[in-house]
Amino acid sequence: MVWPFPLGRKARMAVFASGRGTNLEALLQAFPKGHPLGEVVLVVSDNPQALALERARRRGVEALALPWRGRRAFEAEALGLLEERRVDLVLLAGFMRLLSPGFVEVWYGRLLNIHPSLLPDYPGLGVHRRVLEAGEKETGSTVHFVDQGMDTGPILLQGRVPVLPGDTEAVLEARVLHLEHRLYPRAVALLLLGLAFPPPEGLPGLLGEEAARAFQALSPREKPLYLRAWALLRAWGKEALAGPAFLGQGGEWGRGAFLAAHLLAQDHPVLRAEVASLPEAVRREVEASLHRVESFL
Ligand code: GAR
Image (cartoon, rainbow, N blue to C red; front, side, top):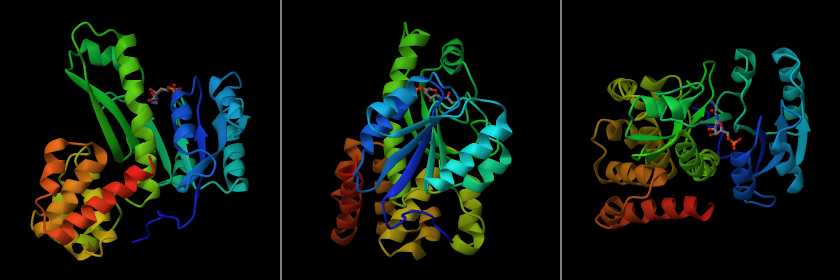
């Protein structure tokens, strides 16, 4: 299987943003010039008035407006720019245009989006209003690989926040936005470290028939946990255990991988304590992997 990340060098990232750009700001803060994992080298907007452009310029990052004159023109220019600037990863952050299948195909696996809901629920616009109207008790945000649909690609990472009595759209939006500012940099770090990837083709050959079937039967929200566990086993030189681990037969290495995979997405005091009960060799790998990711955030 070809894993594009880790690159073995600093990644060059571009952010596409249409508006105020608070997620862009969080990414610029998380990956400034000189960051060992990668840096944001280019910001592109379809809207010349976007505050996002101003935020990038203030931090000395190249910021270009490609005013919207239709999808074909925008994408042709954007593709040229990404190649010229030798960009490795494109991050959509409040980019409110749909990219064409041709663009997405070229960048698949290296093109992420953030959406303010627990996908696959509430794709599209007006999310917080719809969440409140439906009486949801919980909402969140999703970083996902972009595919050809709107907010449909494989999930990389999700974060959750409660919906509380008396919440208004504005309150909920602010709460989710605050979550997003932590979630997006974490998702990018996991990707750049090779700890996240979209479900690859040819799963039966990679995992075995039964494990591949078990994986395919998972819900879209469960899959990223399994993929992280797989990536961790691979990083620990135990990739042969990925198939068995998917079937709950990965022994202590499988348990360590799933604990770490969980903790990489969200801290959990009980799971942290459980790590201490793992056999020494497994515990050491789990702790080193957790520490490694945290050290970049
Ligand atoms: C963010 O909440 C992002 O999730 C959402 O737009 C907001 C942009 O805020 N994106 C979408 O709805 C995409 N479907 P920002 O400009 O302050 O980062």
